[in-house]
Length: 123
Image 1 (tube, rainbow, N blue to C red):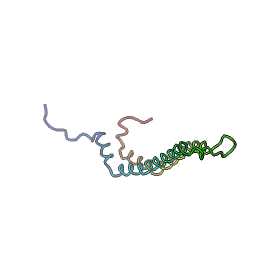
Image 2 (image 1 turned 60 degrees about the horizontal axis):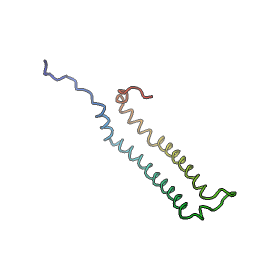
Image 3 (image 1 turned 60 degrees about the vertical axis):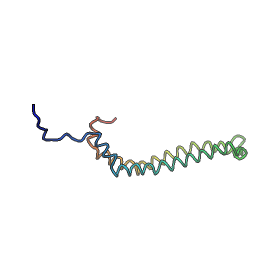
Image 4 (image 1 turned 90 degrees about the vertical axis):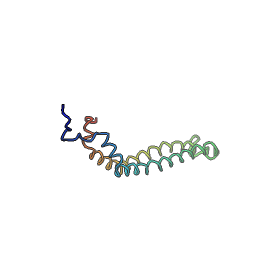
């Protein structure tokens, strides 16, 4: 039985490497950039939705104002605009992620290199 330690030290574990990346300035910047988009957009959408609900509850005459024909009123248009704004925000996020988030995330992933390969190919 030998008490000698091996000449080579084992490579850093995947968990240690993930923690190192999580503590890196680049990852912190990535999270800050993501929060800089998500939080304001969430607040804006919530306020827009709250406006719709409040107007529907307390400004019934205004929301009932006919715009086209006998069934198209402001409430219906505002309700449909909720869907439009949801898709618009999703489109904005997609563009934002393509330009600001994905390049940094790809760079971090490339730096991780073999850690991602330890778990096999992604599919």
